Length: 169
Image (cartoon, rainbow, N blue to C red; front, side, top):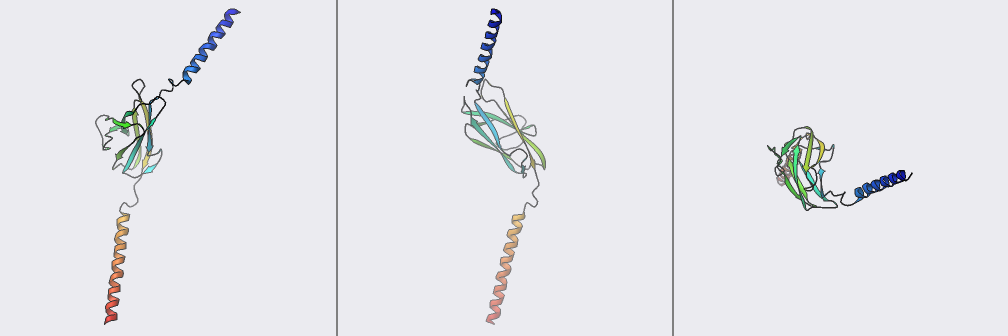
């Protein structure tokens, strides 16, 4: 009976030790978290958009993280958004945003992914967001509207001048 009680006590102490260690700040040691703020999952965007990354502090924080960016599984240069032969990490400071320009994307579904190591003693974290590129119905609509408005103004001015000349004659 004493050995059963001793075994039970040892088991309780072991479980309590595990629970306490999981709840301690050292177990919550995620130094930094990098989020993809834009585009949002499932968002419909145009062929020219920016990926917005944000470095969020955690309990046992560090000042920055080196982040690699991938578009549809292929590494891209975070400074230009163009394809790269290998991952080119970009440094993001804590509480800072970093924009990665994506230009001339094809219509359809795309996935942006990031990978980073929050701290030297932590594994690589990965995060991704899928979004959809849609074709703009008429990309030069604003230009056409401005030209039509200018033509209307010219037409009104010409008519007014003709009317003034007719009245003078």
